[in-house]
Image (cartoon, rainbow, N blue to C red; front, side, top):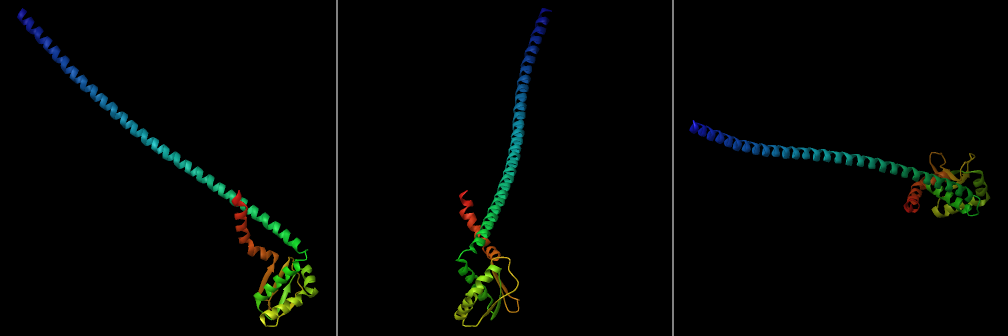
Length: 211
C-alpha cells in the first residue's frame, strides 16, 4: 500500500507538476496573445485616431481655407468699393474744377482747341456747333471766325461753322455734320468719360498704391 501510495503520490505530483508546466505555458502563451492583441488593438486604435486626426486636420484646413478665401473675397470686394468711391469723388472734383476753369481767361484757348478737334473729326464743309450760353458768347466774339480760318488754312478746304439754337447744358462743344447724322461730342462729360480709364489708372497708381 505504501508503494501504491508512493506511486500514487509520485503520479499525483507528476500530474501536478505537468499541469503546472502546461498551465504556465498556456498562461504565458495567453499573456503573449493578450499582449499581441493589446498591441494590435493599440496600433489599430492609433491608426484610427491618426486617420481621424488627419481627416480632422484636413477638414480644419479646408475650413480655414474657406474662411480665409471668404475673408480675402470680402477684403477684395471692399477694396473695389473703396476704389470706386475714390474714383467717383475724383471725377466729381474734376467736374467742379472744369466748371471753375470756364471762368478763367485760359478757357478761350481750351474752347478753341475743343471746337477745332471736333470739326476736324467730322470733315464736313458745313458744321453745326451746339454749345452753352457762356461758350456762345466767347465764340461770337471773333473766336468762331478765327477757328474757321485756321482750319481752312490747315486743311485747304473751306469750312462753314454755325452755332445751333439748342443750348448745351454742359461745357465744351458738340459738333454736327450738315445732315446731323454724324456728330462729335467734345463736351466736358464726354471728355471725362473718354478719360475715365486713364483717370482710374492714375488713381490706382498714385493714390491706392500708397495705402
